[in-house]
Length: 353
Image 1: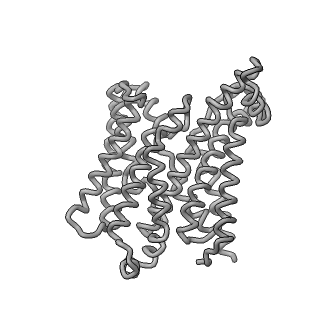
Image 2: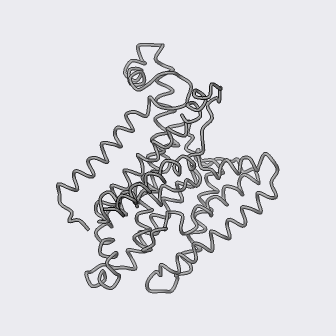
Image 3: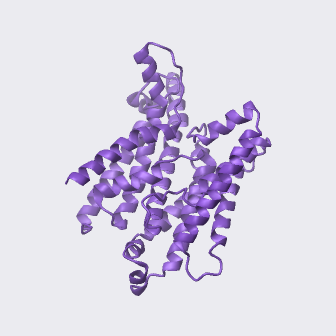
């Protein structure tokens, strides 16, 4: 593990912040929404839409459709990558993801129940499907944590086994609901299961913040203790780390943040698994720099993948001479297609060094 100096920390985090700010600045000019204008036109419309009636449409598309979508992608990417890095450290398992404890399966089952039984009521502007997904994820979290009740310390093996078991159970129930659904319900279910970053309102892009921001703060502040934990539980306890509390707090906050993401966007895979590994290959496994860097790179990665998902069919239509419309590819497909080659290249370079 490379020694973390102030210069190295500032350089790495500064570079990630620059990338993130660049993505946010470019986002109003990139998207599949109708309107043939780019970066400069979007920002010109932002500063002149009050005195130029022709700029109103461009302003609306750029800053009420495209920018909130990218903002949502950044939040989801930050949350999934950060939680993935924390889970991989806590469970000492390179295959751990934010969905390891069955949170995605629980949220998906809750959403499918709402779709099947036509739950359309809204509470404080939040749809019934979103609320049902969040309740489903919370139920799984509660069941998994109940397996550790009465013990002095949370067992990662117990949590993993309980999470896998609940995930399999929820998957079986989802297959049953899909089997009992008609064609329209099945189509809605399949679309929801693909995950989506669609948003038409700025408030949807910020609806997760009450749960995600506290999780970001708690997990990032736990970086030093996670470094000690990675060396061994006994050594960490000898150095003053309350291992049981560290496990409980990190898992609880990461699970709640992941549940919020699943309830709003559906299960978006891959980000929480591979982005922490890519970040570790680039800068090392010191959690003080790994966690914030992985979070920022996760936001950048998912935003760029979302741009590709919106533009891919447009480019394919231009190359084939066909009108493919404004079809948007499932974001999970794009994250895998883009991320897997990058990860394999970095892994190969590390192995040959």
